[in-house]
Length: 409
Image 1: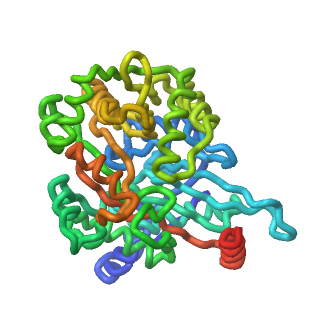
Image 2: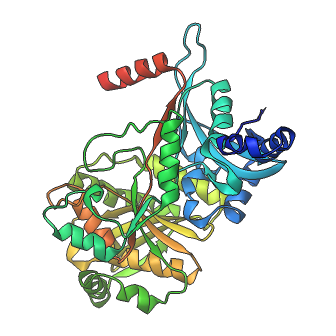
Image 3: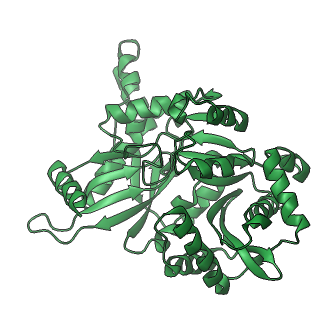
């Protein structure tokens, strides 16, 4: 599928540029083709061409095989024959509908991966061909989550906000840095008809979190990393060492041990847990693609695990996946020990970031998600905010009917 778009900035320049030269310039710059690509080409782009801050394992082609109940497609954007952007699209099919036939929701988690304003492009140059492709695939709605940093806060700034009773949300906390490209992207998305439909409240309002805690690792030593921790975090790490807590890597055959601790965590923290089969599938699929792409760590004394965690890797980026801890001997601080081990391993292996992933938007000590923020920000990491997830509705009637049905369930 190939389409030719016109940039308004070039049109404004028309009186000063010969029409034929203007037409040639527009055609050369923004002729973008979107088509399905092979997994190898998709992965190669992520590993060798993607900006490190944009990288997400949720956009790796193999992730589509983890998500049971979804179809997956790797898409590429081509400009003058060169691959310049990629996306993993997950399709959730509706039951076949009379007259309408096959219809689906198209979802790009933490994607697409491309330079929104590279080489003078604008979001319409990327999104118009994407929507055309997805409409042809039967999508009634498209959801995407641009992984473009909008605002940043240091650990010190976040802690100050957590201690300020007048500040209850990141929206109310002055950022240390504001990125103009993200603001421009949001403005263009809205102008093109994309809308945020996030849930209300101060938790995680979208399908994927909007606020992440991540730790830059480039050029740092273990001592520097440990020194950036909150004093209580450092004490917890030392307590674990002093009481004989050992952290070890485990194979997928130990997933039932992890899952037992995970169920205890779910009961204690009142969330709905995933079944063991989900984690078994994740390790099977990701492990086949890259044996070291997913890891399981257990921590405890005398070989008895009291904490566990998973981590995922792609390129030079490592992410904390799922954590779990039992009610027995929580005073051993095994949860801190397992995180510290995963950070040290990421540092030793040359990772650029160790990403603790999402937190809620809350800074309110009374909110259920406040404790998660306190635990993660204790590592000294920075908080980065992304624009959030945006929807483009292709078939308004069908979209409204689906949303009404989901509200009644």
